[in-house]
Image (cartoon, rainbow, N blue to C red; front, side):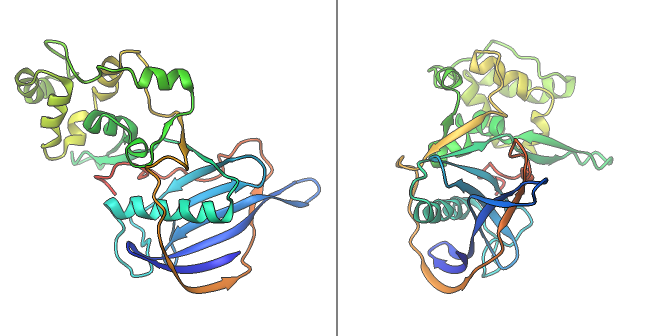
Length: 280
C-alpha cells in the first residue's frame, strides 16, 4: 500500500491506497476495516472509495473535479476524462480488493446555478433530476450502469413510456417562465422534445428552478422524486471499462485512513459536482 503515480491514455494520476481503520473513542484502539482508495493529482484527491475487508460491496463517497487539478499534468479533467478517471479508480479497486463485486453511492448531489440577479444567490440544481430531464437517465446510469438499490423504486423507474407524451399545457410556476417556455412547450409533442429544445438555451438551469422537481414527479408517473436515493453499480456490467496504466513511481507505507467510531458513513463531504457530464 502507499502512493503510486500512473500514466494512462486519459492522463497521469496519483493513486493512494491506504488501510481504512475505525477508532474506538473509548479504548483508542484502531481496527482495520478495509482499504481506502483515492485518485487525483499532485495535491487534490478527486475520487474517493472505501472497500471493506468483509462483504462484497464498496462505497463511492465522492467524485470531485470542480476547481481542482485532478491529474499530475495540471490539466482540467472534464467530460469523458472524468468517466475514465472513475473507471481507473474501479480498476484499482478490482486489483486491490478482488472480493468486491458492487459499489454503492448516494446520488444526491447538486450543481450550483448562479442567478446573476445582483444578489449573489446560488441555487442548487439536482444533478439526478437534471440528467433525467435532459438525458432520460442519470449520469451514473448512463456511464456505469447504476441501478436503484431499492428494487421497488427500480421497477417504477424503468417503466416504459416516460417522456413520450405530455399534457396539453403546463404551469411553469412563474408568469415570465410561462411566457418564455410556454411557446416552446406548445410547439413540442412530448416531454422529451420539450427538454431537447430547452437544452439548447443558455442559462437553462435558471429556467428550471421553480418547476422541474414537480414536473419530474408527474413525468415519472409515481409522484416520487428519484433524487437522493441509493444506487448500486455492478462491477461486472459492460459499462465498466478497465483502464490500462503504466506505473511511473511508487512510495510505500502511507498513513492509515482513520474513521471515527460511528454508526453511519456520513463523515465525508458529498461534493456538489458529482454528476452531469455537461458540468464536469
